[in-house]
Length: 409
Image (tube, rainbow, N blue to C red):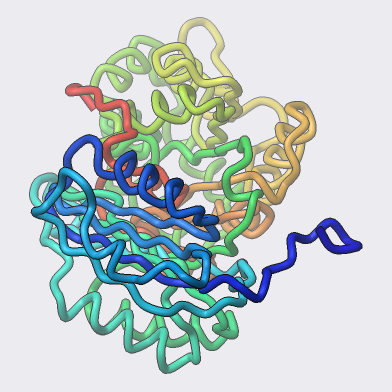
């Protein structure tokens, strides 16, 4: 033991790399460890992965200098395995934090709610080329999911983040795939808060347009909504103008609109899995409390914020009460909920699709543009174009087999 508590390597040892390949079955690791124990070996490092039942096991060990390497050419009781033994670098490699690159196959267009294409070799090759061009090195690759969303997670070391991001964005655009880049580290795996927009994010609709259908003014409302979400109109002014068109609508129309409201595919699986993982979930909407209150109860969401429609004598007055939840207020609510829950902003995730979400996406530790307008996709940390909300789980490092699937999602 050295003066700093570090175990010193003695001169009469040899450092070797053992690589084991073959069909996986119980007892391989225990047999190998028994052999190493009899030889007086010390283990420096172990990595193992199983791909479709095929084992790939690598170990770096210190052996007494007199032990011949062919002693390890086979594993007792497992003649089917290929074992390769050779010299290894005696200096341990320092574990370095890099960045996490998540690659997700783009689905068919968002208005078609079925099917997806696989990540082709050319897609992954383009990603690898982009990483190499930025000076980065791929340390590890993990498959996260297959059908209907195909995704892989890559750990990349030594790449300047800005250069890596630029190269990967080019590859994503050229190949029509989604690529997310995040710092690696403990914060990514800590408890988090996820704050979701509602209209066209948690649900497939703009609720004000569902109400406009009931009022017979859908075209006028939809035109204003499109301009507001693209950032062409001030959100508060546009909201008040749209709500004014609903004046006189009976409250029964709210229930009719609610009955037509459909969650985004994967929404229930997404929320249920987050809650099982210990995440807190909030929704913040430029829509209306009548709908977010129902969503909060239905999904088991922790916090819900939206605008309040003014109702007098059983009819909408065409006004909202209180302060409007606009772009600035959404970001303030993100901070408020994070403070209430005791979660640092660096461990928050915000998801949205419109210009009204831009400040919230910028303030969160990870801002995700989900099937978003171009101005939002360009500004967010990452953008997803797949039509399944639970694909966001893969950006959080969750694997497909860890997701709690709900058939109704």
